[in-house]
Length: 419
Image (cartoon, rainbow, N blue to C red; front, side, top):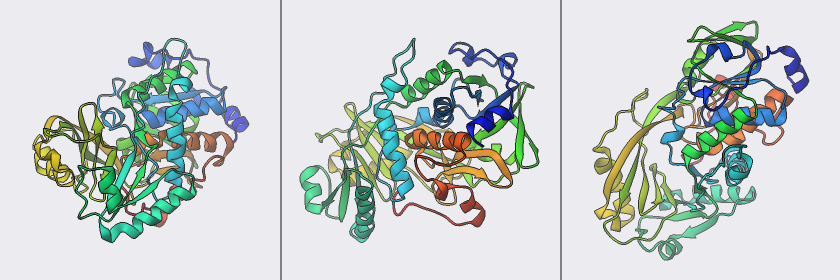
């Protein structure tokens, strides 16, 4: 559906735009009964979709529906803020290139009439390290990154030892360093996007979608917990770890489940150089942060489900052995804080599901299942969904291989050795 057809499909009733103050409390009376696009989920993915919809079709009536106006359990606010080009699938590399540029320009793009938009971007770089038996995989990924325009340096064992003198390298085969990768402040990213979307006229609705009205090949309306009902020409499921439940309301099955993971802030009792974001094939990932380090080790076998309990022994049990093995000065590491968050894990292949269900639910778009990469890929994925709604096609990056069709065919499209 192109912009003209979309805007003609629904004649929205006039409604006042939300303000940053009013958006923090549910107000069903101010919610539009009809709009052009209704987005389920007001985290960074939903907000970037809203932003790009208004950029491509300024007259479109866009509503973002968020069940937790205080973002108590929002994955973004519990994220590390990392952004990297080190992937193997070209779609992910290209999304990262766009998203990193977007984040660098965030203070300019998201500035509003009343607020600046700092993001605290740190170009600290990423370093992926692999054992000898995985070097060929790393070399293939490095070649693909270079082919697509990334600055990426392949380092052998000697070069790793020279570049990072505190690192143990005798059991490593190689590494790739991408110096222009980095990290930002997820809090500032989320709230900057929200303020800008509201300034552009997006309706920000503090409520929860509890039902979807399906008729023919389209979703016609969403029922909210408050009792309100919103009809729309297009719907987007950007509910993150809760996206499978939203999809079920429309009869759609998504292989997405919440996966609990921990983040830790720790310091070293010994001198050690500042480090980039170091990652390995066993899901260890940490970086320098202020006078210490931030990161952890993801347990892929963690039982799926919504669980925010913090296992305060996990650092000593799983993280400390991994970081101390790789960097012996961290034998004296001390953990100061641990917190939990949820990945929206795509159980099929770890890659996001971006697209609709052609011929069955034509106007119901999914943008979820990022498996820990939602913050870094939100700008590019948000632009892609906006392009499909407004133009009916991908115009910037071809993301067709990340569509729902691969789920229906049970054909995983996974990263090569990188999580």
